[in-house]
Image (cartoon, rainbow, N blue to C red; front, top):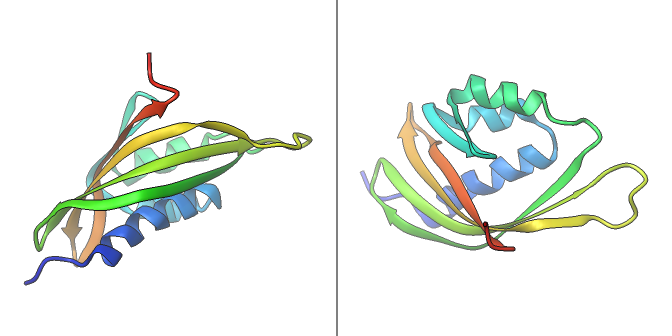
Length: 133
């Protein structure tokens, strides 16, 4: 078994944010490993069901756009990988003309090959612009 290529791994990152911004909550949750953890807003969401529940509770008026840049693979084996990237988040609401930039985050996704598919084992980030207090 050979190491995965960068496009395969990057695709998981992009699918996650595409689903998040498109409110395809089921698709986002399906990207999580069975025991996968997403550290979201300081809370560890463990497993696809916890992710799905958190996403279903989001404000339906809030629209987001997450832009991924500077993506690179820190390490990879045939069954696991660590992907690093910057993520810039924007949000808007009905009646708001200009989107608000929420910040830039230094992000890390630990991926694992599970049942023949790449899944997120751990997703976490820290805000770098503006810096976290």
